[in-house]
Image (cartoon, rainbow, N blue to C red):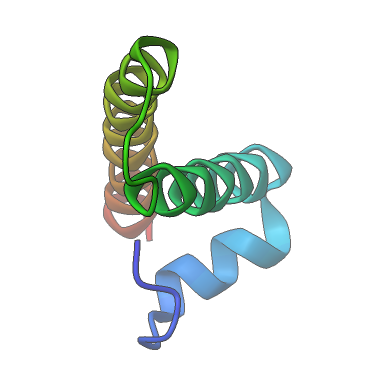
Length: 76
């Protein structure tokens, strides 16, 4: 999720919805760890498995974030 691009719905949810805010924080944490793993020259098996798992978790969170944003928009 690109936090550098202004999005009024996202910004409003970040301020008003703790669940949404936690999902965004988790997404950012996963992104940082994936960046660390991507810079490893020779990742071991555990690190490769962690990368695959984090990518799946990050995608699920992203889907949930966009679903919440859509629901919020539809409700207003």
